Each structure stands twice: as C-alpha cells, then as structure tokens.
Length: 463
Ligand code: 5AD
Ligand code: SF4
Image 1 (tube, helix red, strand yellow):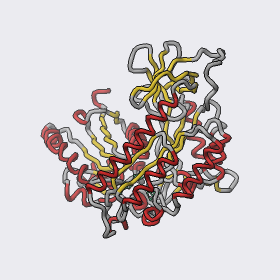
Image 2 (cartoon, protein in one colour; image 1 turned 90 degrees about the horizontal axis):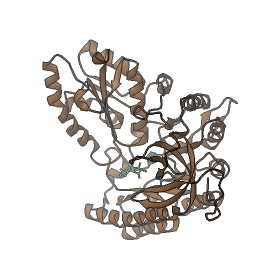
Image 3 (tube, rainbow, N blue to C red; image 1 turned 45 degrees about the vertical axis):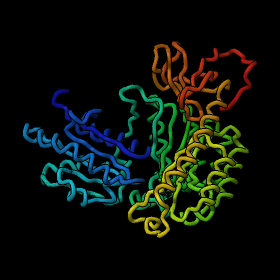
Image 4 (cartoon, rainbow, N blue to C red; image 1 turned 90 degrees about the vertical axis):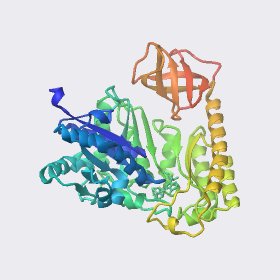
C-alpha cells in the first residue's frame, strides 16, 4: 500500500503565510493519497512555494527549477513522471512567463488557488499541457482546505491559523498588495471552529496569521464586524488553549481594543512584531506608510504602559530611495529609543511594478550595505541585552519537543525565545514554570521550579 503511495515534496520560501499554506497544500494532497516527503529525490510531485518580497526571488526560482530538469528527464524515461509546480507569490506575479522560461514546469498557481490543487492536477493529467491558474476566485479557499496541525509526525503543540489575507496599504516598496490581493478577513465563526478543532487535537498555542492582521474586520455572529482584539478575547475563552500570538501588524491599525488586550488578556503573549521600516518621517512618507516616527513611538508607549514587559520586534529597510545619512540616523535613534528584543532588517530591493522601484534617487549598493551593517550591530546588541535580561527570571515555558540532549526538553518563553529545560518528568504540551539560568546563542537554558514551591529569591516576573 505505502509503496504505491505518491509523494510530494514542498519547498517553502518566505513568510509564515507560506509556511502555513504549504502545510495546507500537504493536507489537500493527502486527500488524493499523497504523502509528504522531505527529499525531492523520491517525490512524484515537487512544489516550490515561492516568495516575491525581496531580492531576485524570481531568478532564484528559475535556478532552483534547473536542478529538477535532469530528475524529470530520468523519471520520464522510467515511465514514472515527475510533476513540477510553482506556487506562491512569484507564481502570482509571473504567471505564464514561468512556463515560457521553464518549460519543465507543469503547474503554476497563485496563493488564492491552493484548494483547487486536485482540480489542477486532474486538468494537467487530462490535457498534458501546463496549467496556469492565477485568478483570485470568488470562493474562500479556507472553506476547502482541511486544517491539521503538523509537527513532522509529532503531536503539534503550536499551530498557525490564518485569519486575514491581503493588504490594501500599498507601501511603495512592497509587492504584497499585488500578489496577495485586497484585504479579506475570514468570518469569526470559522476561525473559532478551526481553533477548537486544533485544540481538540492537542494544540495549546495558536499564532494567528495575516499579512496585515490587525486590519482584521471579520463578520461576527452578532452581525457586526469584529476587530482583532475582540477576536483574540473570544478565542482565549477556548478551554485548553493556553497561548495566543499574532503576526504581522501595521502601526496604523494598532487600535485601542488590541492594545487593551495586551494589557488585560493573560493568554495573549507579551510579544509584538510591529514593523516600522524607518525612523525618518521623510522616508516614511515616501514609503506611503501613513504613520510618523512619533506616532509609532506613541503606540509603543501605550502598549508598554499596559504591558511593561512586552518584547518588541520590528522590520527595517535601509537604503530606501532618497534615504540620506540623516534619515538613516533617525532610524538608529528610533531603535535606541524603543529597545527591541529582536528584529529583521533588510537592504531596500527594488521590486518590479512597485512605485519605489521607479524612483530616480536610488541609493548605491555599498551605502545600503554599510547602513545595514551598522543597524544590525545595534539590533544584535539589543537582542543580546534582552536575552541577558531574562537570566534569573521566572517564566512559563510551553514544552514543544524533546531537547537536543537526553533529559532535555525544548519550548518557548512567553517572549518567543527558544528555551532548553533540564527535565525528565514533564512531557510535550506541558506548561512548566522555570527559572532562566543562562543564554546560549539565541536561546535560553532553564531549570524547572518545583510546583508549589515559593521562590523568594526571584520576583514573579511576568505572564
Ligand atoms: N525591499 C526590502 N525589504 C522589503 N520588505 C518588503 N518589501 C521590501 C523591499 N522591496 C520587508 C519589509 C517588510 C518585510 C516583510 O519585508 O520590511 O515588513
Ligand atoms: Fe507590504 Fe506595507 Fe502591506 Fe506590509 S503594510 S504587506 S509592507 S504594503
């Protein structure tokens, strides 16, 4: 039985939306009898789930495709065809062009069409010619995609749940509004059903996903549209669900209800990824971000007032067209003012079809590189300082998997850092109270605090 079972290899690039989508594609294909494999060599179907957000993503996809050409020929000779699909944002942006440049590709399909994979495969089998599908269909893809939490065969303790897709913000550097389409929120009832099912299957922590998640305005049972804060409060009533997170947000949509949830909802973890991109108002304006450095800092101040221990994270772009040394220094000053626990930073990369790519004051590559090095040095030192500040503190860790060494378990802190715990008595899915002992690279080591024991030395920290 298993010998004849077909296998799919899915290679994922880019953001967590893609990670989530790849898992759902695996689920859809399981319904057709496909098993997921981690090696391309034994696959009957290879899917590249691509990302278009930075760099020469499309070029990377073409060179990756070249690697399968020989495998495909050899398989054809043996009478066991290898089907190759390109999914994700490069597929959406390039469409037919992919088949023209890489004729070995059989399927090209955009992020809104994954639920139609069985239909696309049938169409390909029937017509024997490549199938390209990049429309934005009217139906909700999530209605047609099963949700099974994965952990590589282990019980999944944490899971992603998409609640919103698309973006209407049109930042001038970004392709997302073009590849993922307009903002669309899933209805509250469906999200709650998915979350309940996940929790019944053993999930204890759910990360809500959306390109621009805090713009969530989902249809609710009361006939109104709920905000993300309201949705989070409703989800947190699910018994057995211990933790909620969400990503990614836009400063403009950080409303009072969501800020209050960070203060009042103990299941909402004290971690917030809130991209700012730049600390210069001139650059923010040219980026069409529709917020200023001051309005961003004001939001951070409000969140910290309610949740002083919150770990903050952000995205930064250096070398946006027209960025001067003074603009860049304003970014450095903003980073100094906020103090981030972690962050992502990138050199500006012109994306075809976006307004910023057409701007004539592009910043030279060496200047971008030099600024990125300076920014990353500062962000890395803040990251180390945050990790060091955890040492000696008590916190709750959700155990997710066995640790690297025998007698060790691995989980995450409320602030999202990986934590290794010396312990032989607890199991996956347990929430344990620990004291952080040391920092090792980007992770933390801790020992269990026996339950019921008072710990007079360490003040109760958080969460
Ligand atoms: N160049 C560099 N970085 C970009 N990002 C998005 N588009 C670009 C681009 N053209 C970054 C932003 C965004 C993150 C997901 O990727 O910082 O928040
Ligand atoms: Fe892109 Fe801006 Fe939308 Fe984020 S908010 S997805 S950066 S357009």
